[in-house]
Structure formats: C-alpha cells, structure tokens
Amino acid sequence: MQTVMQSRLLNSLFLNRLVISAFLAILPVILHAQGVDEQYLLGSAYAIRGDYFKAVESYTLAISRNNSDDQLYIKRGIAYLKVKDMEHAIADFNEANLIIPQVADLWLARSYALEQNSDQAVKFLKSHLNSPFRISEDSIKKDPAFDNIQEAAEWDNIWQQNWYDNTEKTISEAAYFLQRRHEDQAVTLLDEEIGRTNDYRLIVARGKAFMQQGNYAAAAGDFSSALNIQKELPEIYAQRGNAYLKIQKFKDAVGDFNKAVKANPGDFGLYLLRAQAYAGQNAWPSALKDMQMYLKYFPDDMKAVYQCGDYYFRSEDYINALKCFNRNLKEDPNNALFYKARGKTYFKTSTYRYATSDLSMALDLDPNDAETWMYYGITLIKSGDRENGCSSLSRARDLGNAEVLHYIIENCN
Image (tube, rainbow, N blue to C red; front, top):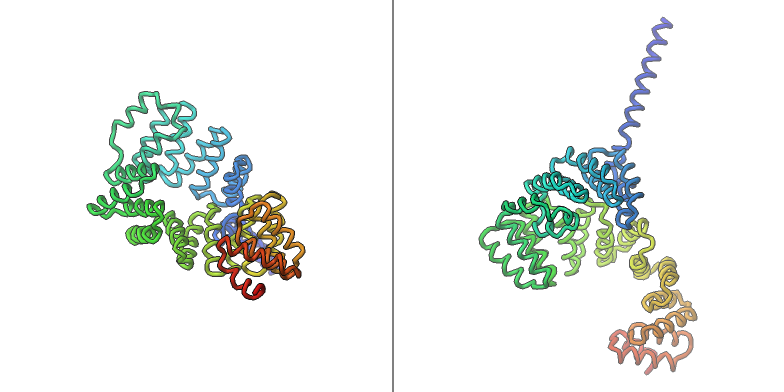
C-alpha cells in the first residue's frame, strides 16, 4: 500500500513539473499577447536612432519570444543590412518569407543587388512584382539599392513586361504631380479615374492629395470611403487620424490613432500625434502618458520635451512643466521659446523674480513676441512696477495681442 502511495505521489509531482515547465515555456507568448514586447520597441527605437547593432540585439530577444512574426525578421534583416551583414540579412528575409510568402522579396532583391548579384536580385524583384506587396515602378527605379545592377541586361529585360494595372499607373502619375506640388492636377486626374472605377486605391491616393492640398475634411472623407470598401488598411487609420487632428475632430482622431498604434506600435510618431489629439480634448493624463511613452525611448528629443512641458503647463502641473523647460534650456540656452515657456510657468507659481528674468531673456532673443510682452507686463505689475508693466502691456497690444486688453483695463486705466 505504501509503495502505491509513493508511486502516486511521484507521478503527481512529475505531472506538476510538466505543467509548470509547459507554462514557463509559453509564458513569453502570453506576455507578448498581453502587450507590446519591450525588446521590439527598443529595437525600433534603436533603428530610428541609427544604432543598428543594438537594434539587432533587441530584435533578437523579441524573436526569441515570438518567432512567428514576419515583421520582426524583416526589421532585424534591415538592421543587419545597415551594418552590411548580408548573410544574416538574407537569412532573416528568407525566414520572413517562410511565414508570409513573398513579403520580403523586395528586401531580398535589394540585398542581392547590393552584392551585385543581378541574377538573384532580378529573380526576387520579379517575384515582388508578382506579389500583393508590389510598390510603384518609380519607387523601385529610384531606389539606390538597385544602382549596382541598372547596367545589367536583366534589369532592362524586367521592365519590358507590363507589371502594373491602369489604377496603379494613375496613382503613380498622381504621385508625380504631388512631388512637384501640382495638387490640383493630381486631384483632377484621380477624380476622372474614380468616375470610371470606384477603386479604393484611387480614393486613398486622392485623400493623400487632399492632405497635401490642405483640404483636410475632404481627405478624411476619402479615407473613410476607402475604409468602408476595404477595412484591412491599418496605415490609412493613421492618415485619417492626422486629417481629423487638422480639423479638430479630436475624439475621432484618438480612435484612429488607437488603431494605428495597435497595428504598428513601433511607429513612435503616432504617440506624439495621439498625444495632440488627447490634448485637444483636454485629456491631460492620456496626453502625458503618450508623451512619457515617447520620451522613454527618445529622451533627447527636445521638441518632444517641450511638448510634454506644454501639456504639464496646460494641465496646471507647473512643477513638472518646469522640469521639462529646465531640460530644454540646458540643451539650448539661446532659445526664446524655452525662456518664454519657463517664464510663464514661473509666473503661474508666483515666482515673479524668476519669471521676470526669463521673460526678459525671451524678449532679448525675440523682441516681437506679443504674448511674451503680455506676460512680462503682468509679471512687472505683480512685482510692483506698474509703470513699466503697463508700458509692456501696451507693446503687446500694439503687436496684435487681443487677450492683453483685459489686463490693460484692469491694471492701467
């Protein structure tokens, strides 16, 4: 009886160990499913900053936790390509193709072209041109990666074949007009083609033309129409979100940027745009969360530090605003905007001596800023110098600041 009990106990312990081992094996996958892999984000940030060796290291760790994402292999392959490690780059692009056929053919073509292997380059370029991932002819022909093989007979032969349909040719022609800032011609061309065929690709192209034209409401309308036809267009959510941002439809912009970030969390510019959309709704905790997310990976981006400080200021968190503007001025001590921002913040904390000093410095650097003159005048009045304060408020009024009239009536008449 005791032997049987011992045997059952051993079996139970063995099974428990198996369960624990299995759980530990899939834990990285579970964690990845719950949120974006930190190493993927780090790799993307390193790649943007041009530190490709570190990007490779981070992507490698991300792949060790999720080896079924074609984009991870492509991103690491690109990083290898940047450091001229062709063998590993090609291996990664081939691995991506095993996950989704043809998805990395263009990168394989580029890699072999850089090695001056025209046979392999043309082979994969043909495969790319036969794939759903095909990019425009103009983009391929202007790609410097193919400079090495443009004298080869194979290169000329590949362009004897007609790879693109009428819709793609129209889009390429419209892109040509847009490059030369002929937005009206691009829109007219696309209008005519859309009248013949309601292809979502044409509608997207016209939306982009409207964006460049500054007709943001029309752009948002076109992007919405395209998404109604073809919902699997994650890159269009970012573009429509930007259009919504321009026309101050902030709630709609946030919704689109949420989808865009989910589809491409390594595009850090999306966090800045979403922060702007949150700020438009005065949703300061969410705006600041996005700013902190961005600054975690790009702490030296002084424009973003200023944007973060501005959001702290507008949310009345003046202590954290000062921390941001202090960093700005440490990096760039001759920037009128930064002195003005810190001076305004000191004013809000009733630290008038520091406010006066900063605003005075801002005016030395930019004597025609009406808002700075207004804050400088109010600060002087608060400090007891009514005469010079009122003179400064008058200067702000003369420079076109309408807000200052309230302070003039209240303090100077």
